[in-house]
Structures are given as structure tokens and as C-alpha cells.
Image (cartoon, rainbow, N blue to C red; front, side, top):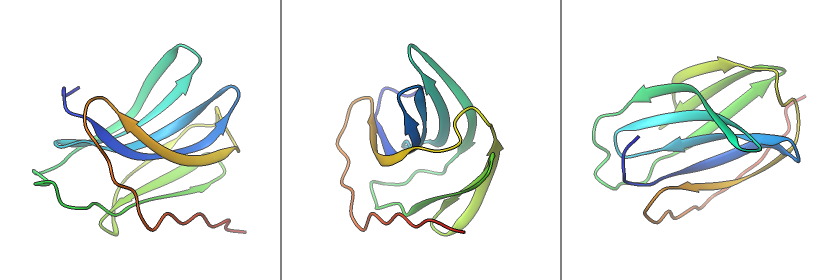
Length: 108
């Protein structure tokens, strides 16, 4: 993991843990965090982002989640550890993040 920070979304957060989808300068990562244990579920390489804004999106149906960057599908994970919970913003490591246009929509 790089020393520089990353920012993104927390989803399906409960007292037991959460998932985090974060954009770092050189990669995008999806992790499951439980109490004192962090497990990276997937990582996708990025070309340099040069500090520009990144539009990210997470779509989950049951245990299947798809991840989008700049409206392009970059990958998916399947994990049934957490099936529901809160959503929020995420900052990891050193650095600053600016979040805007945060939208949460339930899909039925």
C-alpha cells in the first residue's frame, strides 16, 4: 500500500464491520473491515490521476457488488459477510479528500 492516502465510500456498515471502496493515487481498492482485521477483497491498478476529481459508484445486489470509476465498470466482488448497513465517506492514510455530490439510492 502506498504512503499516500486514499478516499472513497464506506458501505454496509454495521457494528460488526463494513466494506470500503477507495481510490488511491495508483490503485482502487475494496476491503472488508471487521473489528481488528482488514481484508483486501480486490485491487485494480490506475494510471496516474494527477489529483483530479474521481467519480466512483458502488452497486450491490445481495452479495454481488460492482464498482465503477468515471462511470466505467472496473470490477466486482462477491462477499456475503455484511448484507446491509449504513453508508458514508472514507479517508485512509495521509492526505485530504473532498467529497461532493454524495447520493445514496436504494434499488428494489
